[in-house]
Length: 288
Image 1 (spheres, rainbow, N blue to C red):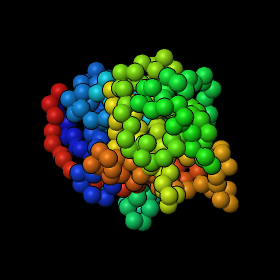
Image 2 (cartoon, rainbow, N blue to C red):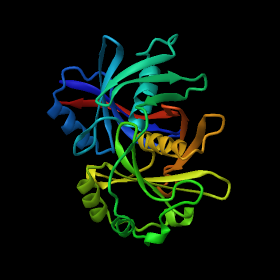
Image 3 (cartoon, rainbow, N blue to C red):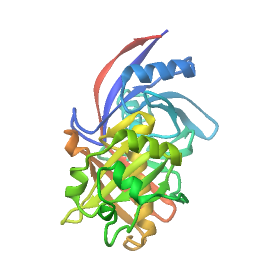
Image 4 (tube, one colour):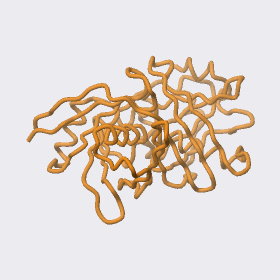
């Protein structure tokens, strides 16, 4: 069996930036073990596999890291639907779509400028007993570095499809210069049954900067993370940071990896939307 496969840089409008994802746009006929092998071969943080739709949804999309299947992936979703549009596999007159994922049925929307917005599951705070000393040690920080005045006093676990620690830091310099012990963070994440840590801070201009660390699922760090920034939006909305009932920001991620990414986040009540653009950088065929 031969399948077309693509690599797409998501959350950017420039090639060789953003977060790369693999996409197999017509994955019917592939077994779960085939998808796992393809994702391992691509060796990207996630590879998406697209299947035909059914009642109530337009496509089913499954997401694999190099080591396991995950319920949802933001950057791979943005990359997938941008690619489907560019390949002519979407009705150009239709702006709203529904994808079936292991996190549920989620809506997508196209803006006139080419931005793809994806709905995430409603944000929820997950009760976990976090150990700030162990967390700080795993991140190569001191315990007093955790917390960001006016935003979030301590780390919390939030989810809009995947459970992550939202970890506030006192300054962007601390965020940039973290010396992470990946083995320690992976062990801590597994002990808590979490994907990883989404660490953030805010600069003097009020811009939000983030780093996403998920060594427990085979991703030491990635350049753009839709689900985690959506969860961060839900977390900050819960802190009362909305204006007129809406919290909107652009998360800056990946710059210190040489892959600058910009992730649009909007939260209104239980609605969480994350969006960005994407660029196709590679296409080919893979034999199974």
